[in-house]
Length: 407
Ligand code: NI
Image (cartoon, rainbow, N blue to C red):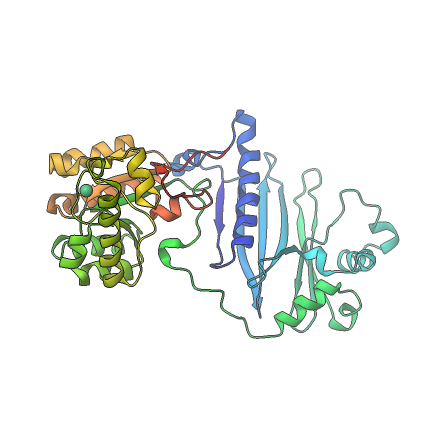
């Protein structure tokens, strides 16, 4: 299967509609094997690509607070015939509402529009059980309707798409109240949706095989910028668990990390075993680090990682943030050898995993190019910790190691 789609920042309603639509198609494609879709099925896709199915979802128009997205599925049967189905989804960036194109039309006008678009008399078109539908309707800012209908594939014959434009004069009487509201929006300049920080941009790791690379114990003014350059070149977003003492020692580097769009986490001030401290001392470690990171980057982290992964019930209740441990420990600090830790991570990686490394070791930096190149070649999308858990809650005082499997 080939799939391409675009999320719209700041439109959670549209993005989650897109996700469930795609997961529905992927589940159906996986069903013959008796399984539900898992992101691992998309790994090494070059070897097992089923080119018969193509799925896409791309914005086609925007105006005011409304964005319209065309969702399209094209399937080639074993006899070479092609069936296509497409739908336009209208989403409002302010109210978060998501509507199908048919909702823009008056129910009583649909038969006539369909007849005009398909060239079939209205009296007959209403009786087609498998006939053309009004899913793909683009409402232009001038009020024209561009109606694309699909003719289902016949025996040995491909389905066909026809687009008919219905002039505005006909349109005004056929729009529903919602249709008029959306037309009004489409006639205004497109308002940019609210800005989303790169580290938080929507991605659904139930769909895509993801991994979250995380780097602890920095920032370090020498090694961290070298890592940032590699991440930028490879187009990777990662997570940096900083200590408060290092954020105070290298505030410019801490700021550079945040400005590059990476996620920043709290790794305590002085890197102690939190399990050996009183609740008040734990709080002080967290609070001083929040303050140091806020001073350097402009905002305090919402996630934390206890040094050595050491946490118990007392630590969990004292830290006041979600505790992000890891699923894969590279042991980079122990081997100090890319020839050891890179193969270890590549062997243990699974979709949804958080990977532990350290950006204060030059030998860790030396292995990143190879590690990232290999993970991306396998099909992994490398994302931040907030992104890998997108759509699943991250609760204060709870411990997380990898994204839970979709239920
Ligand atoms: Ni550490």
